[in-house]
Length: 268
Ligand code: OOG
Ligand code: NI
Image 1 (cartoon, rainbow, N blue to C red):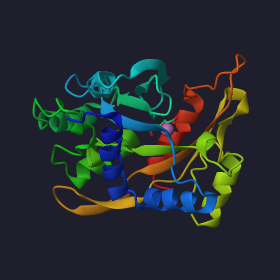
Image 2 (image 1 turned 30 degrees about the vertical axis):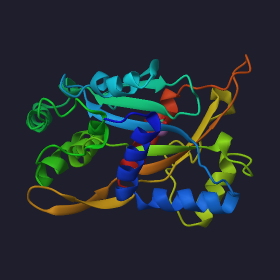
Image 3 (image 1 turned 90 degrees about the horizontal axis):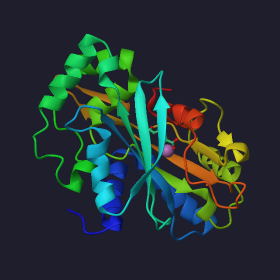
């Protein structure tokens, strides 16, 4: 169990960079190029199945224990996902975006694979917050992975990687010596990183009070039950927030942009 929010995020970060070396490198690059000693996180995102054992609420409970509250709700019909975001009163703590796959909307074959996966998670596995970055609790074959991939990239990613932050997000607002998200993107492209261009390099903007960009996920090796494969792991996101009419900085998410951010784990 973690006694503090910072400890929990430190655990999530360690696990995340272990399979996302580009995030670690970009973190250093931004510090070096902009002179920011501390990089503030806007949010992280977690993925799960809507099965009662591991549904969104089961993950959320660990953040609620630490003082987080549910705020926005989002629906992604085509991707068969629900999502919620959580905020802490202390807005320097990262927001948390949790999505869940509506398993009953997939084919019978996919449902069976997911049922088999969830059955292998022990009943007490979710009780401590280290569960949030405990990875995979099951065996899955590369064929099962490929079959899921044809139907739902999200299902396949989750089957391969399990529970962990699928991205951290740099708060561009908190970056000193950087004017806007375009400048961050420029730095990244000059350094040779590939950005997710689905829906444009920058998703959203001042009009929706949130502009976002992200790298395409790194590739890392996964040991399936029959063989190892290099597949997309996690990505890094960059967010710039703008004030609402009342002058307060918008803290929510934008479903149309999120829909494209999910695709950062696609094979480019
Ligand atoms: C979450 C994608 C949505 C955002 O900032 O809009 C998101 C995911 O890929 O799991 O993080
Ligand atoms: Ni995000």
